[in-house]
Every structure is written in C-alpha cells, then in structure tokens.
Amino acid sequence: MQTHMKEFRARVNMTQAELAEAVGVRRETIVFLEKGKYNPSLRLAWQVARALETSIDELFIFEEEDE
Image: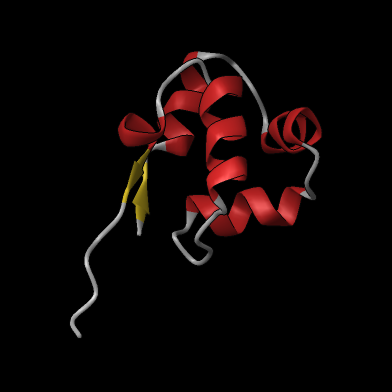
C-alpha cells in the first residue's frame, strides 16, 4: 500500500501526533500508515481521510496482491 498522508497532513498543517489524537490511535500507527507498513481498517481509513479533508481513494493507493 502507498499513501499520500504526509502530503495531505502538510496541506492541513497537522502533525502526526495531532492526526493520531484526532482519529484515536497512537502516533506510531500514523507513522506505519505513512510508510505503507500497515493496512488500515475501513473505519480508520475513513477517519483519517475525514481528518485530512479528503477521500479514502485520494489518500490511499491499494495494490492488488497476486493470488
């Protein structure tokens, strides 16, 4: 998974800690999301997108896995 979280955080002038507090997770979760090391639940993806004033599909780029 790839993400545009860092860019959208900059647009709304929000730190990782502020975003984490806004969506109810630890800052480390935001770090892992930004690095593409963690796939968020649909609820968390929606909360992050809402906090960053964008949509899930603008924020996250999910890649199909080979079966």
